[in-house]
Structures are given as structure tokens and as C-alpha cells.
Length: 295
Image (cartoon, rainbow, N blue to C red):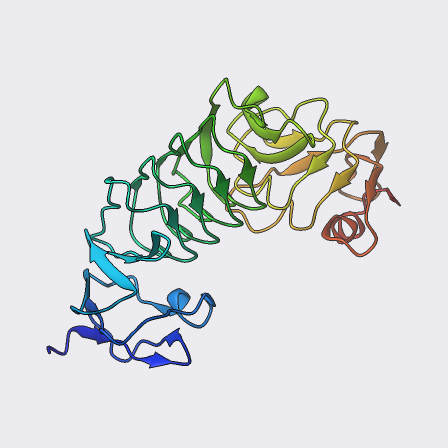
């Protein structure tokens, strides 16, 4: 076996990278891979060129340079030369499966029903069309931090039922399109919102937060690239932690409901807004001298 091969061994059910290199070989004796991405898949290098499984492995097989679990059809790990099989064999994409890979376009087949936590994080995907048949997108699935000139288009299918917090954190969304027959989500005003809970999940360039929004989800404005400021409508009752942090593109000012005027050299129109004690919104208000009241 060449020195360019990543050799894996089973240590307490966890993948451990033994040698850096380009080819990944899963031995026949490996029957389980830990779900703890921080100890296993999260540590796999993005430089992997190919993935193969030794003959006789009862739990995994490789196809199109993708590692797939036999039992449930989960794509466990991809590499920079992976093509997700479109023959119906892949039913879900696991946590960290494509983390950090240099992909600018991803084709997800219609057989996929779930995309796991951080599955495509740290990428530069420019066009993301989620397929009809997809039902769940888990937290931080497509979290990224692109260059200032990057743009991303997002399509939400009619079958999607669940989008967890931060699914598109940091994504510089140029356009958000939601299938008109999706009963759960809306793309009104260039924003991705949950119709049932009136929760803001993401905002595209030039987006205007709907007037009936009640909750701003974690990381909903992370990556915002609209006007120099964003207006929070008076309907908003709760702003979750990290709503205004971490993105490469952030509004230079945030206008909250119930206008008030700040004091000092940087006097500006601010507002009173409701926060949960100890939340990020609370600290944000204190640090920026924004009048607030507790929920």
C-alpha cells in the first residue's frame, strides 16, 4: 500500500486518520463508524481523492467515491471526486459527509430524504437545488463563509418539512425560491420563513423581513447582503442567540421596532426590543446601547 493512502483502523468505533494522503480504504473488519463527527468524520482531510471498501465488508460499500452504509443507505463520507449516486441507493447524507470539500455545485438526488448536521459545511456552493423528496435539513448543514463577491441561489422543494437552525448560516444568498405548493415554508420578500411558527430562517440580498414575523432564528441574518441596514418589524417577539454574529456580510445597522434615539458621539436611531435574559440578543443590546426589555 502506498504512502499516499489513508489507512483507517477501528478504535472504539471511531475513525482515526493514521496517515495523510489521497486514497481512503475502508478495511473489511470495520463494521461501525462513530456518529461523533468531532472525533471521526469531522477530522477527515479534504484532500482525499478516492474512497474504496475492501471486499467482504458487511456494513459499507463504496460507489462513485462515496462511502455508503448498507443498513440504511446513508452516505457517510464523500471526497473531492465524489458524485452522489442517483440510482436510489442513497437515502440520507450523514453529518460532516462533505465537510470542507472544494465543491461549487452539488447535485443531490431525489432519493435523499435527510441532510445531516454540517454535511456540506465549509464549502463554496454557488447553486443549491434541494430535490423534491427531501424532508429534513439538519442544523448548520450548509454553513459556509464565502468571499465577499460570492453569490448563492437556493431552491426549497415542496416536500421539505423541517429546516433546523443555521442550515444556511453564512450563505450569501442572492435568491431564495420556494416551491409554491410547499405548505410549510415561504419565500415572501426574499426571506425564507416558517409559515407555521412565523420564524425567519434566512434572508437573501435585498430581502425584507415579513411584517408578521414573530421569531428570528439563530444565524438567520448571518450572511445578509441586502441594504446597509435591516429593519426588524414590530411583530418580532424573540431574537435567538447568534442572530447577528459570524457572517462575512452583516448589516451596518439594525433598526428595531419602537424607535428611540441613542446617545453619545455615534447617536443613531435605535429601538426598544424584547430579549431573553442572558441571550445573545441581550448582550448585543447592552454592548450597542440599545434600549431593551426582558421577555
